[in-house]
Image 1 (spheres, rainbow over the protein chains, first blue to last red):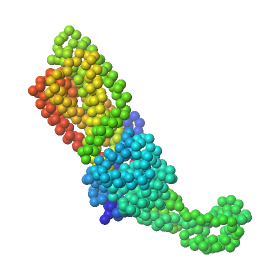
Image 2 (image 1 turned 135 degrees about the vertical axis):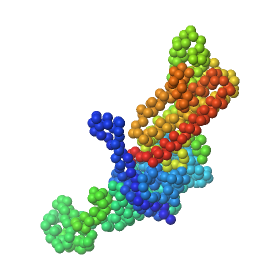
Image 3 (image 1 turned 45 degrees about the horizontal axis):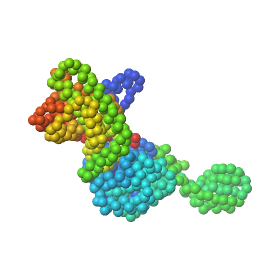
Image 4 (image 1 turned 90 degrees about the vertical axis):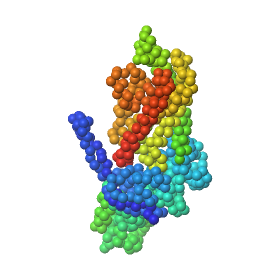
Length: 342
Length: 264
């Protein structure tokens, strides 16, 4: 069964136009002009149950707007969507019982009361039986190491502590789909890793479907088998992460450290005939760029055979760079073409 | 589920208790207000015994009771809702399986209960010591008045909720909230009893919900409205409560479509 089924989803906002100057302000006072802004432009995708899917894109690409439509907060302008068997905005109160949501930038805990009081209140809101609640809470508290935080008021927690509590809060009613909107924003690497491990384990053991938006591609690499990339309200890539990497990474870089000074002319001579490029870092270090169509072993063999080498390092193009390339060009197809022609 | 709603009352009550120091000063401010109006009316009455059907003693009690009632039904739901809409945290409210406006009402009631117990009761006691306030002795009047007070709270909160929801439609509804506050205080009869309004204005007032907030209950409590007519006052309050549900429901429905969560 599909956890999320989205077809031609569209969202338009009416934004007030502010005219310039005093006369403009006066005109605005009597007659407002509006402008339609289309934040999400007819996107379609499907996510099967049990999948962890990353939803990425630049700021303002429409990620959060999509998440808000999927969670029933916003009413779409057009298109069809079905989440967990419900149309989110129609049966909102019934639908939200089956989902969990974490907004990295907003707290869903009550600021002034103790964490455990917030959890108790959520237990009543979601009508979770006391025994189930205890079992689940103990399990979550143990896995996220929250033990001594439970009695503190939320306003006295650090961001990392708060975010772990937010996760627990969103999972107390055992949702089958979890939406995470930038869950690791502003967190240190230890907490990030902890949260990733936790999500991974939950997905494996309970089959929870997870859709997450993030700007930290390491989250995606650690968690997601699939990414959907959004740009200017349109889906520009939907597929596996590995595929994204192999398709759009341009090649590898090999850094050589030589025993003695090696002029670039000599290096170029060594690799003559194959399509690679050299850059000099300093007197004894140089970088060799090897595109995918050239075999690494051949390039290496030529250099190794002709120079005295102290050290070799191989760099894979990282996801950040690939994604940056795609964002800058605006579409995955364009990025692909560029790779093909370069 | 009801127990969750009751919990919102409890938690708001506890939160108010945590910040109770704010409210000690409130008692003094209300006492000063009552004092100021008491002396003002003394001056207005001068040597006259009755004005617009109010005796001096009735007027004093009317002022004291109206202000103390205001302490109970007054809340900042309009501001809370407007703020949640403006900073986008209304999104978090919408991912929970409850009725947002009902929860707000409950929170307002928690606040009202706190003010009733820790503000109104001691406040009324202090006021009775200082000013010649004569409270009714019939326990039936007290009981009926409590029912009316609860309905006052509902109607006032409904007006607040409607004002707050306007934040969905305009970028800043601060002006509207201020206007509402002045209108409620003036037209509900806290500042001047409606009996003192010019004929045409009190005629209009009969067609507006404001009099049901203070004027009618306080008139009953001070004995100007006899016990036999209590039923019709309560009916009128109920009528306004039910009628106001309609615009709230309509506003909420169209607001959901227009909702545009600020800050991404």
